[in-house]
Image (tube, rainbow, N blue to C red):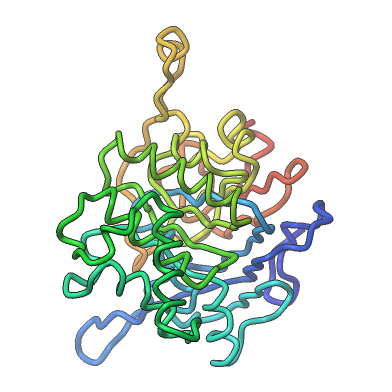
Length: 339
């Protein structure tokens, strides 16, 4: 089941449910100035395909610089895709009108609650801004009622409405950002490392709130994160990225208990286990070397320069992203040999 530009990989073929989001062969390249009028493409996202069903949370993990955030921003058309297709609810997003309509149903919670909120706007104006942009109220009273309702959803009270973002803690600021994301009554939210800038004690509260909001409002998430325990807790399925490529995709339990790609195996071996006996028995797989620059990515498999199983074949061709067991997809030439 090879991936090609003509036949996008159907990662949903075993599921009767129609996907809400379909990403087909998505590419996002940035031209980098190399001097003397020369540019070189930085392949931030390179031929990535996946689907997300309605009401599902897909976790997206990988090292810094692997392209996770770029995937989220490109889906929402904050970056114009270099190539590939984005489908929402069975409709391809192509024209400016499509994008405008899509943004009434899809939104984003940003990583840094300190820099993503305008310091000159009150909380009410920050949350109300999407309502203003999409003209989603008839009267000022209706706007005010909607803002207070959104604040209630995220655990803020009406007294907070007239205050400014700098008067709040990190956790409260992220709640303001989440309320703003909910303003357009979206179906789909890209959560770009929404808890990484918060204290550990606050992270659990915010993650639980995402869970509750999903159940209450029927939301669908692309949850991008570094913390593998957080991803496991909130995700139904997990996708692993490395250097702009997707290397593994399976259910959360399957990825944690039976990772098949050497990179996924290394990531999962680093996850702390609360049981000391199991923790001592677990072998940590430490990768050699550093992640290569996306500007000078290795030929063939992007992971081969750090992989203990790499052969000449790995340098010659990028392995196809194929289904090796039911709903478990891996991109590795030697996946059957090493597992």
